[in-house]
Image (cartoon, rainbow, N blue to C red):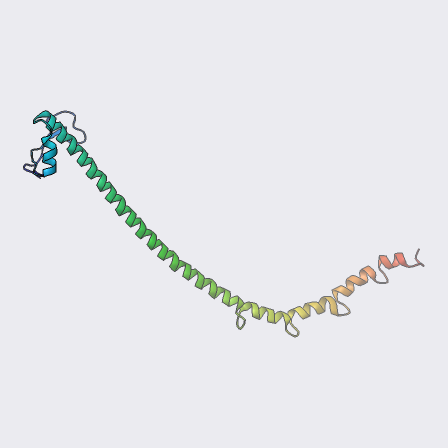
Length: 168
């Protein structure tokens, strides 16, 4: 099928919306054998013209639909590319976060130089903070434990006074 003449919009007719013509004149020379065979089945004149217009409309709608499918394919491909890019960025970010967390944890938990190791050493070493704390509360004559026990069980405590046979 080939077009022998360009289209000419019929702008004089009423009912044209948004700058589109109401009708358009189109002269065609049809040379596709399948189309010629199909058109030949209709009487020349109005029946053939109606069929040709119907076929043209169906063809235009099919082409619009095909373009829509192509657009959907393009969108699908672009979406896939965006997702791949996002996945790549997330993978990179995940690696950076893991490296940062590993470095931070190493600062605290490294057995050789970690802060936790240093702190535990200060607590448990000879004359360390834990030993000093225990000595203060448990080990000496004036420790907190001795004072507490003396207050509750010592010679001047209410319990011993209550149990003393001479005090009754």
